[in-house]
Amino acid sequence: MSKKPTKKPQWVIEKEQNKKAGVDNVWLFGLHAVRDALMNPNREKLRLIVTLNAQNKLEDAIAAAGITPEVVDPRRFNAPLDPNSVHQGAALEVKPLNWGSLAENCIGAEVPRVILLDRVTDPHNVGAILRSAEVLGASAVIGTRHHSAPETGALAKTASGALERQPYLRMRNLADTITELQNMGFVVLGLDGEAEDTIESCLQGRKDLPVALVLGAEGPGLRQKTKETVDHLVKIDASGGFGSLNVSNAAAIALYASKERS
Image 1 (cartoon, rainbow, N blue to C red):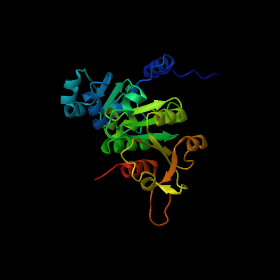
Image 2 (cartoon, one colour; image 1 turned 90 degrees about the horizontal axis):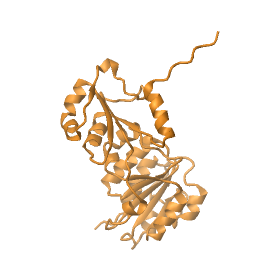
Image 3 (cartoon, helix red, strand yellow; image 1 turned 135 degrees about the vertical axis):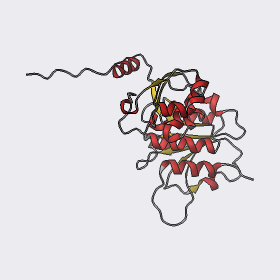
């Protein structure tokens, strides 16, 4: 006897329909990530699910967003999240942010700094990089449309609100993006543990220039095409023998090392 197919939940059906139509909505979760999204006037908010306790904690943000929440029993929290998600009783469905073009985000700062990610797919790493980028004043974090972490609830939670404020662009082709930045006047440095030069030595006397830092995934590192396209391969200056840094830590250190300080 054949097994009767399981009916898909409505949220799954709607997500599949949206994806076919080119719209891939995102569920953000956790009090901090949801609060920052509610307070972001540029974020299109679709549906808010909260427990009574979370509603009380988010009362001001909910009022500012002008959204009517669905208040549910904590034991019947029905937002379509991974069961392991630490949602703290709050989940918000949103549309992805549109940050605009590369030029709009990378030109205009007094001394621009940009981070590019070559196949960094872990949303927790990208979230941590966004947080560091905001703290250290980067103009943008740039990944690719494929083989990079998309905007997700896990990424937003790790970013601790930075996703709402720090431009995160996903471009079609990384090598073309590097070339476009070079044409804008950026010095593009690729992080490679085998490089001879350090970030500091390569930028000696040039820290007043726009700088883009390219980091690869842990393990494989930068692709060969990326290495051939950047202006210089550099390493993080380190003392003693040590293993490779986590990519989010490397991004923060590289960004700090590239900045001009009095």
